[in-house]
Amino acid sequence: MEEKKSNPVREFLKRFWGLIPWMLEITIVFSYIIHKMLDVYIIAGLLVLNAIIGYTQEEKASKTVELVKISLQINSKVQRDGKWTTVKARYTL
Image (cartoon, rainbow, N blue to C red):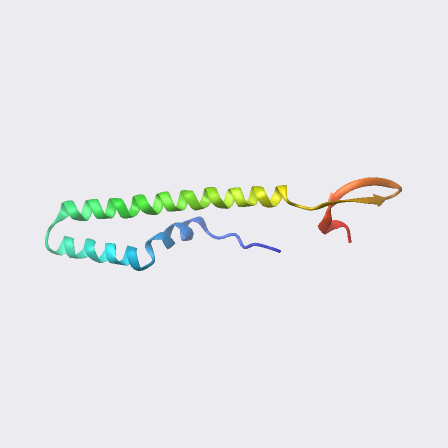
């Protein structure tokens, strides 16, 4: 089964899309309007830090899944040109 590779920038920006990020972004806007700049910096920093941590954790998890998929690939012994060889099962047809 083929898997589609996604754009890493798009995957990172998805971290800012959702109910909780929207609430934090609205809070940043309201804090900016009432001139609470320290709150703006703190909330924006935490929002970006959360996006970075979430993205890196998901990347590590997807790499681990890829390694597991490779290690679980089924091999089969086939006879080709009078010699027995081991090939990946998807190539035995």
